Image (tube, rainbow, N blue to C red):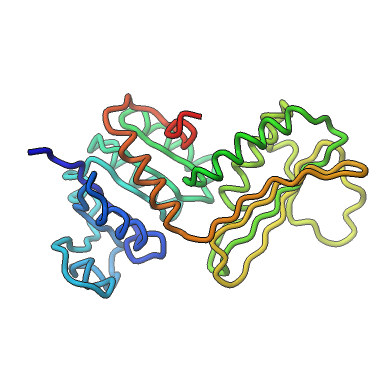
Length: 269
């Protein structure tokens, strides 16, 4: 009898958490063994199936990551930076594959995640869709082919509840553009223009963020020169693409050597 990898979903009550639970539960390649929520949440101690408005599935929501990670081979985590850092350390103790889709991570968070990756597999990506990761690859190639006479602007749109800007995907695209140009994004990044800003500085990479309604995710990379523009675009219309990508990542990570990987590794790009 084949034993399926056991998967824990963090942030079970969130939009992405519930989509991940549906995706994992429907898969014949993994088994849902735990759902995690913050202490004091109304779902703690209840069956996740019933919490989501369906039939009981025999998995209770818990607020104890140490206990639930101990019986998991994979953790899928789309929560908040401080929580993801804590989960990374605990997942490393459990030697479980930790898939991180959390955005808004700062250098201090990334340093702790990197430390955890010395003991276990971490797959971290600002976006886990095939289309976006192909867009990242294309952005890098186009940026490498064009000189500084071509301005680069990244425009992203998300739902009104998103708390960070630019989005993790926009930053992935910005990093790809900077790599293509052979520069550092931190030196070239310009965002939040307001008022009398003066003329654009040549060689910079601009970011604009739109927030409204229930937009799942839209990203444009604009290369603009005198007389012409190139626009690379990705539109996400269904959040399930990210859940399917995360499931693919957690399966890919099984048996890999400890380290930090990104989604291009998963896709073999």
